[in-house]
Image (cartoon, rainbow, N blue to C red; front, side):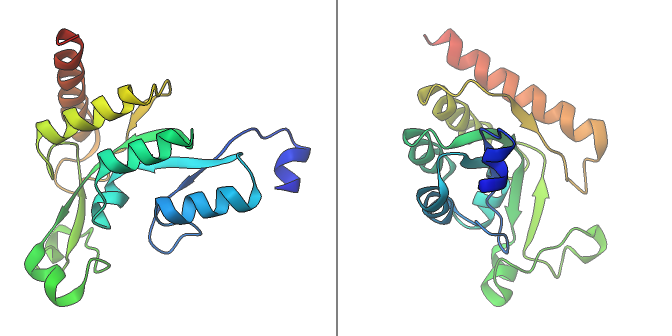
Length: 166
């Protein structure tokens, strides 16, 4: 943190990812308590789905601590039969090997339905998140612009529904 402070870094957004220095909200908040409020989350929901976290609960938990610095929108599919045998760390990015893997990243709504994504957007609204909700596409089935466009379509529509209800 000394280096960050010496260079006027006000925020350091860490991705909660298995195998990284922080991998879930608990480890992120522990590091934050130990070194300072410069530490916050790059809240990539795909990694939280992967670990079995409820994204709405995580957003509210971290939001109460003002610890979300970036929101990344990406979905995840867990193949339960494979995960039951090999665990969720048996990641598959190669479409030819999907049958052997237990997890793949997908575009928004291709792992969880639009209702869940509506709840996610509402949770960000509930905590007063003012940052950008960026779309990351690592979908091996809907590559490039297609995955981004479909994710944006879902997110725009659920946001519009939420704003209509106000």
